[in-house]
Length: 361
Ligand code: AHM
Ligand code: MG
Image (cartoon, rainbow, N blue to C red; front, side, top):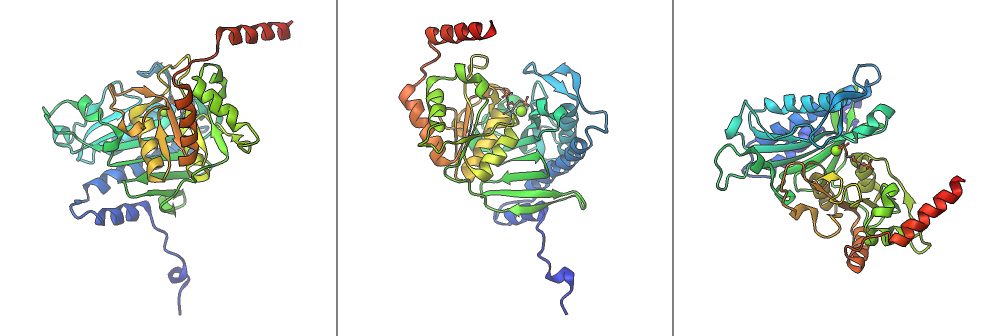
């Protein structure tokens, strides 16, 4: 007689999945899987804090700002500490860098002999924390670049192009907690089962639809987008386009998560306020771009592939366009057509101001 346990499908945990992936690499030692399990451990701690945010004293500003001049939230700091703690004792991580740390850190326990570099945004979309909207963690893992290595240049270890990532992923703390990762062998997604504390396989080898029905952008910045973006967005609203629907959460992780599953395009173009883009290359754009490519999508900065950009500093910013292959290709046609042409023309600005004045009367 088959018992209920024997007949029920075997839930694959993220640990098992990572180990199975590891077995496909003949030279793997297990160290890398050990490292990834540090990230899942931190994700569980952060998830528990996010879930109880209104109960614990973790909402609101921490009263300090990070290197980018942004107000740090208490949960930003807690998430950063959780990752530092869970990764710091793995023994094989040489360097960590984070949105919340001014400079990369050499990990004291493994020091200069640690083989890996882990770069993360501990809690992306933190302006959404206090209003119960999805936030996330993003991470990228590299091997230390030992070419011409003097043993102590933590900054040089971090300034590697995204194409050299060994693993990348994100955790979204949404209606459920979901972790998505790639090691260059497809994109896999796991849901945290809070009753047993395990991430269980939800989707293996996810493929992003080539085209979707959503565009995702902070359209309040429309007036200062370069013309190529503006013309593309105008097209999205035409009958020929469908038209598309707009979706914008304001948490990159959540906006990308939807784009990965449903298709469409996410854009954060250059703006008057952030002419070089707002999002950070090393711990936001690079991991997201690799996941997109691994799922059959594309990611660029409106001109070139994100993964080929060489960061000049740890907190470099970049414009970001990411989505289904066909959606991104169409946007690029508009970019090629209009180049770096800026808008609005002075006359358009004046007309907008005059109308606003008349309406205010
Ligand atoms: P953060 O890392 O400080 O939270 O900022 C990054 C966030 C992204 O999650 C999101 O895509 C973007 O900022 C939203 O910016 P905006 O409010 O300008 O639309
Ligand atoms: Mg962020």
